Length: 69
Image (tube, rainbow, N blue to C red):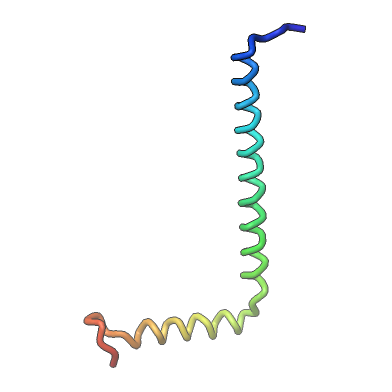
């Protein structure tokens, strides 16, 4: 078994910490994406249509000059 100098051991330790932090970040972002996907799929098609129609009506209620109709 090789004995590495103290400086080299620290460098290897930092790479391990960074690698583990990266893996934790990827796992956390996957959890966030999965949660958002579940929330999005929880809507029925009718609810989605209603929400889109409401957003469309709200967007059209404002004129380009910023004044309401």
